[in-house]
Length: 277
Image 1 (cartoon, rainbow, N blue to C red):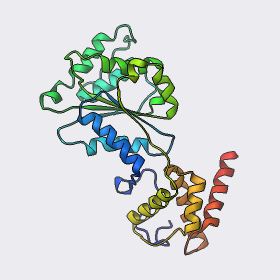
Image 2 (image 1 turned 90 degrees about the vertical axis):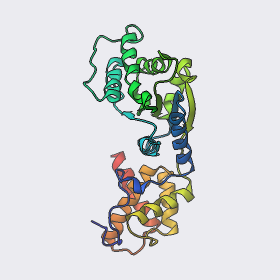
Image 3 (image 1 turned 120 degrees about the vertical axis):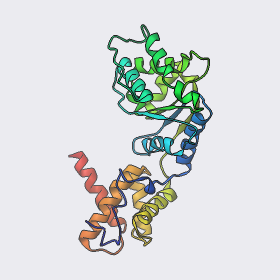
Image 4 (image 1 turned 180 degrees about the vertical axis):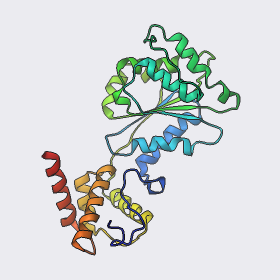
């Protein structure tokens, strides 16, 4: 709606924008590097945590794109509220790309041996080709204790004396105490990283980057608006997107040439009032 007014080719602040819009700060690059390091070196697991909206899931979805061709496939599991049997079934299906595995009688820890053996035999084709698969488990904080135990069993149950695949575990920081209470799983973590919020300078760079990808290098947001975007969003990219998008809409409606702090503050106040209601 507002693209012509701001001389944009497409909306710059959609959460589902393609990878061209991806802005990787130092903290994002560090977390992605650790995920790739674990998979490329055939290590046990990488843990990535961060508060909602900082870009954890987007980073995890970059793993298959950034891995060398000699690695993979990457199975992405993002349906966390599963039973252990359902979780293993999704994993087996993802690794095999054959008929889904279905065993409703599997439980943890009793009765998992046959299931685990099946899961661990599925990557054999990749191993024969010199490839190392990876399994990304998103929304880790939603997993119950039995499925967390299953993750440990997946890493611990190595029939061939080697790791058949690596795990990339992604979730909110609230999962950390739960993992620490499972020392067998905690000790298998090869790397841990925190995706933090953007600082004030990174917030301004983030906004300019997304505007440039959308088609303009003009100073759409003045310095006061950039400060307000940072203060109101607290450096969380998802919040920046929401504020900046609505500010562009309000600026278009008011026919302003540059967005200032008053526009951003007004949008933030309105969004807060709607949430409170």
